Image (tube, rainbow, N blue to C red; front, side):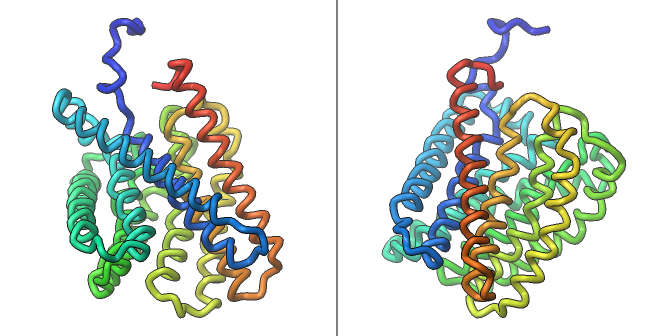
Amino acid sequence: MIQRDKEPNWLHRLHPGLFGMSLSLLSLSFAWSKYSHVTSISTFWIERFFLVLGIFILCFLTILWSIKAIFYPQAIGEKFLNPVLGPMMAYFPISTMLAIALLFPRFPEYSTFAYTLTAIALIIQVTIAWRVVHMLSMGNMPTDQVTPALYLPIVPGGLVGGAALAAIGLPGFGYLVWGMGLGGWALLEMRILHRLFAGPLPPQFRPTIGIEMGPAAVSTITAITIWPNLPVDAILVGLGIASGPIFAVLTRWRSWTAVPFSFGFWSFAFPAAATTSCVIEAVIRGGWPHQAATIAIAISTALVLFLLARTIILLIQQKLY
């Protein structure tokens, strides 16, 4: 085993899964903003706390990765070519586009900055997606490394990208990109589900299974964002579709709880927040009892806070690599 003092330094090891923290916090902020419509309790500071923390982590990690690109470009290249870590790098552009979708309606005067940032995020996302599709189409993807992480650049990337484009005033392009994300989900689902039903993932990849819960919920909530007048029936159908992957992941709890904590476990947080937003919409539009929204927001918030606390403690103890 490599000794600690011979390991690359922390900047060299910087994990792309860290951006899952910002994505999850921003998603939870969005859920809390929706929850404000079904409760008499003021949620302003809770929503603002998760929003600011998510933006701060996103900006901080962007700076660190920029420094890493200068001093350790080879390390970034190695992660990009990795069949699991490469797709996880899409957390960065997805988080960026979600931040744009949340912030631009509040600050429309920064349109040029929003357009530029969206274009950069989409270029990065497409680059990562191109690599994933190339590996799959050419048969270069090792079977044991087919994981739900493959969804990230193509499915959430397309869906959130569509929402970001619609938010900055380019709905036509938003519909196109959203449709590409939905089509990518259909194509990838067959390959990934076949691998998941073949047996447990290798231990080091099991934390990524949380991403499997994301596509249906993210599809539904981004569709609501792009088409605000979407019928409640469509929302309920989306929730029904999302319930299948959720049950499939939860039934395998012994498999993924048996491995040590890692950054990959943040893959559970943003699907939970997206599902919560869908449940809240069902309460607002479908007449569901408001207790359903309260339970959903409590579960997703508790999950994010647990992951945040666990991550911080292990980072301080230098046990998370």
